[in-house]
Figure 1 (cartoon, rainbow, N blue to C red):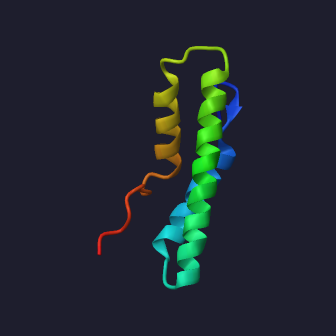
Figure 2 (figure 1 turned 90 degrees about the vertical axis):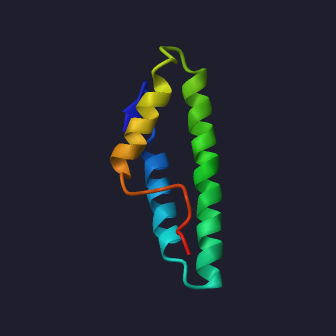
Length: 84
């Protein structure tokens, strides 16, 4: 998916992979995999947002476009951990 000339496909894939790991934590190794995947996803999100903000164009609508794109590709995903 491309938003204002910036490809966010890798970010969407990384978020999906993080959600998969986060939901299936059974061992200590799974926990570390989820943490590492989160760190990668966070760093990628940070770099993507920076690229979007540094590129020319209408900045006012970009956060809305990004939120819609992420929600559309991961509607059941949540950034909050599972309840015990």
